[in-house]
Length: 106
Image (cartoon, rainbow, N blue to C red):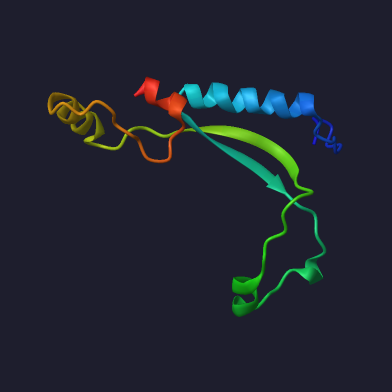
């Protein structure tokens, strides 16, 4: 969706633009979240708890509203744990669910 609220199809150039923006945010230790929706008729959405639990969320034809970068600070004690690993001779430390490029900012 553009600034005027008009739908715009994503072409390869725009996809690359958004990928670069995500990489830039990730390299600054930000977790990226894309916010999008898919238009659908209200009567097609289940209302009962059991029906909702079984409902497969629609994929594709999403309207991208924005991509935001959220600061995800290291948890308390992480720095000390990494330092302890280094002192113990650990050569490689993996960090949960973060992109590889974020390791350099820790």
